Length: 248
Ligand code: PEP
Image 1: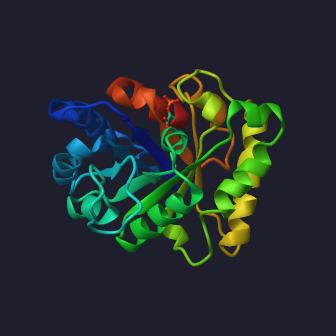
Image 2: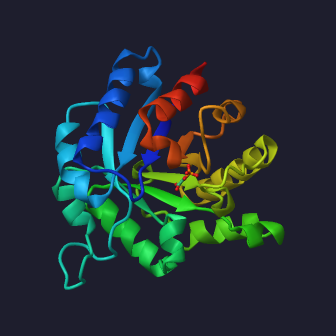
Image 3: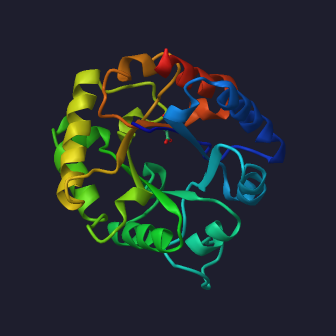
């Protein structure tokens, strides 16, 4: 089963930060497990073109952290479309990260982002996750189901979609779901996705405070197809430790 280790840099990185990716790439090229997983990094827009070109024939894929909900060109100041992202060589985009949902991304916007990204041959990393209040009110599964069914539909190519389950309360906090809880939630997410995509679910990742230590407690959950990693992806050592410890 192919696994994914995705690093989301958020607002981090300047041109010389490519050294971090060079170290990760070197580790990957020597890792005996390298055929079991893919590495995707999402730097800020400012670095997309140089990094995409640099890693074109290497094993690290480059993606954007978001995209605008229009296809090609428009008069929206500072907006960047899927077409523009693809044109500089990136191959993935995140859609629906909780940072952007909390800044106003609606389901309608997310639907357009997903559709236009796929149409422009960008693979989509679609983020879902309940917040603390929703969890407290035992609404997690209902929230996740809505987030999925409001945006994904059977006409989309599931091969180009990765779903990342990121409980909002776990992002950047060090708080984690228990392994039991996470297993149940992941199975539930896959069940919903199988309902949409004719019995075959896209890959489902976990994201939220993943590091080299706690990744060990998640590796027994076979339903999890990989990890979306924020904070720990800004250090080559921390990111590599996650992969090393996952396969140890
Ligand atoms: C994220 O922002 O997608 C994320 C998972 O962050 P962190 O790993 O820092 O919790």
